[in-house]
Length: 343
Image (cartoon, rainbow, N blue to C red):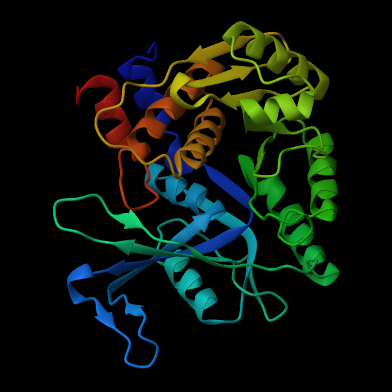
């Protein structure tokens, strides 16, 4: 890593003054901790009964990015999203209210949507990592109502002049059923055109085809799909493809490369690659990409160079993948300790 302790401290010292908007699909991650020693058999059905001994809930999907922003100590974070008027929505809103710096003026509760929920049963055995059983998901399968879209766009337009960066996270499986609809994307494109200095960093689990000219973050397979090229293994070729896309977009492009690290490219032709840190034991990759997104946005908003932002994001991802049985986060002290050995 090239970043020095003094430069790191100067960048993160700006974090408490940053204000970020997060436009995307917040969900509830509900963990059901099961004790196998309390296993029973149902008298009515004869099927096994898994006894839940503890329930944990935290924001997931775009909420995982938010969790990482909170862990970094950003000043104010504004989710532009919605939840249902249901029990899961109550849990999600309560979890968000407990987080320092999270402002909920633009987080909408609506009876027109159900709360997006990932319910994750975990089998806990002493001395072993948690084992996740079949997940139970609750999603919306119908288009987001136009009136709700209008409220989201209005929130985005009010927030844009007030924030240092915007993160966009499209998490839903079916287009037009979540927060990041075509109408919201059009508003983001207009915002990028009228405020070209504002960082708008976008990611989507369905790929970024059809997105306006924003700063893109994706993996290598998504880069290949978006550019119509075969999936490339050679880092130099990936860099060339990323630069070509960055020039076409007029915005930076970031590509995560799993165990090979992360790469960034600029419209000016700059390419930086930061290798992943060595694995230090058992890992769980869930949430690593979201930690990269949060750290890229925070570092760039604080004035980091392309290389510096990539280095901080790589270290954060390494910290997150070593947290088992949860979707982890990386704090500034943890990042500093891994970078510099606590110096």
